[in-house]
Amino acid sequence: MKLRLTLALLLPALTGLAQTTLTNDGSTITVESGAVLYVAGGVQNNAGSTLSNAGTVQLTGDLTNAGTLASAGTLLFSGTTNQTFAPGTATVATLVLNNTGAVGARTLALPADLTVGTALTLQSGLLRTAPTATLTLPDGAVLAGEGPGQYVQGNLKVVRAAGAGVVDFGHGLTLDRSGLGQVTATRTAGLLTDNVSRGVNFGNAAYKGIDRIWTVETAAAPAAAVPVTLQWLADDDNGLSSFSLAQAWRANVGSSAWGKAGNPAAATVAGSSRSFSFATAALGRLTVSNSANPLPVELTAFTAQPQGPDALLRWATASEKNNDHFEVEASADGRTFRRIGQVAGQGSSSQAHEYQLLDPAIARYAANLVYYRLRQVDGDGTASYSPVRTLAVSGKAGLALFPNPTSRATALVGATPGTVVTVYDALGRLVLAAATDATGTAALTLPEGHATGVYVVRVGSTALRLTVE
Image (cartoon, rainbow, N blue to C red):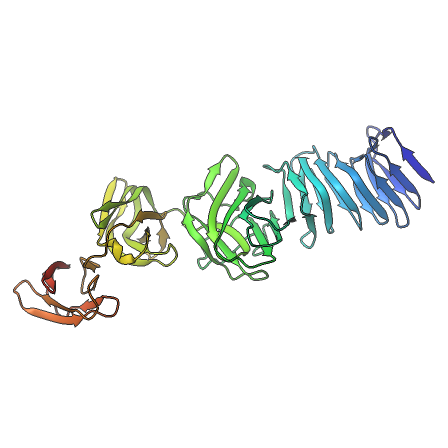
């Protein structure tokens, strides 16, 4: 039997009765372009049966395909309770989900792999893949309608052909694909499963990752750092309440060994939407966490400003809790930081406090930008980081001591290699002498039992003041 429909076929459900099931058992059903096959219930397409759809097949129940399902038109799931689409070997051009059931009862479950060739549109409800199933959108297919309580949970793969410039994959990933060839990005979201949809153990058990991981595979390896933007919904915050210091993390495909990608910075939060941009020299598995876990101080300001050849770092707190001290860290590349100074905190205080530290002769970093951050350490040794600040470098490197003040050891930088450096106490007595190495740096360590106070460090005709505490 071959049924050609040029008008809508309505199979209404009767109030108080179970929904019907349209069963195709060995026949061919053809829905022509412009026609609608509406089923108030489910559709069962058995083995040896064919359902050919060039129009619209709309149903309020489940769709199970064990035969041939060729849908060049639209499959519309419009139930008021959870539905399931078991696709078998179906080919589907357009899939629309408009399930208007109550929250928690408007999910379209996809237990097996499916490719949607043209468009996936979410009007209401969640589409959830099985953990082992993937919904694929090939190059040219579009995703529309994701929002709070209305997105693809599980595995959503989006493919984009080789090209140049920035491309938006539509599922929360944007990157510059130049030179990468074909890019395949699979987003796994909303499953609340460690190292499947959310990263864990980022080197600190306190760090938490969002409930989204993007696995990015390219035909060619990146030749330079790739600009990337990751976006997610509040639905997938995974309990994170602050993104004042977001951090991107990456792992190799198939691995859960996470490493930092890009520099920490504040994520953009607008309503239920979150966004974080960074650059990474390697792709693979990508996710976002909050590596701050808000500072146990209320940091109200942190600035890095030029002061002649130096950098003046200032920060302020509105309140502090168990704050032992701040360590100021600097980096020439934004990745590797080292401590340049330490400032005592106020313990626990509800009063506002201001702090500052001078970083001398920043041209010594031999970089166009110097990156600064605060490492706040509380009384039990727990540490948290502030947002990163940058300062442009101008001028040439000069002689500088750091740290200064110090308790015993310091380093002189900016001298000519092989230069003799001498240190004198307040009475003018020679305390130690050293020579600078090939980088123009001399490590200076005062002898045991040295006195506190002011010392003079001489390099040729130049004298620098060193404070020992």
